[in-house]
Image (cartoon, rainbow, N blue to C red; front, side, top):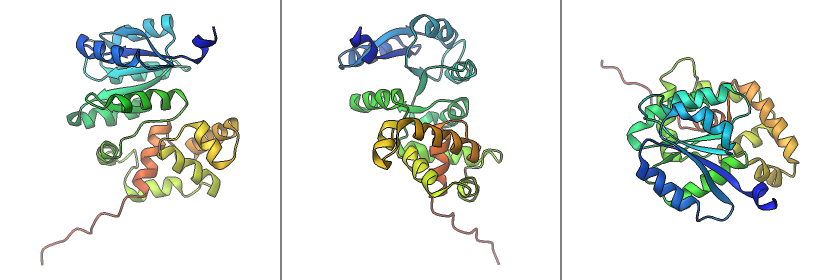
Length: 232
């Protein structure tokens, strides 16, 4: 029973059986991680989650009946749901931006090295997020095109201006992909205290989850865009 409590249960959602086979073979070979379920379409996700109670769902975005974005949104609306990490390619960064809005807490490229996939699973299981700086910048660009999201540099800075110094430390640590336990150790806090800070920060910044908060912090630190030049 002790092993079951320590094991991170992972569910795979992808319409390509070869992708699922490869992920299962890789993850099942890692101590402390076990693939407990697979699905080929987002329509199967609610029943799969109810039956197998995974901690983490690796979610494809493009599927035939119900796509990964809709499936992620529906999981978030259920309340106490597993952490969703989307599976994507570089050409799908616009879909990743939508997945972030839907509540995904991280994303992976399908050709990511195995150690990155394992690190992502462990990070989100511990309350962290998985943000690749290169893809994150692309997502920031996509979200910045949405006037209501506020991920341009000035809007992001405005979202963060009401945070206390300690809250800003926590927000920066979230942007670095650190888990609650890592933040607690670094800042000499308890994990419940860190959770309380993050809850308050999400409220103050009008962000829905850790990934949106991380993107806001990253956007706030981007260099300003050069002024547009007009012809004389």
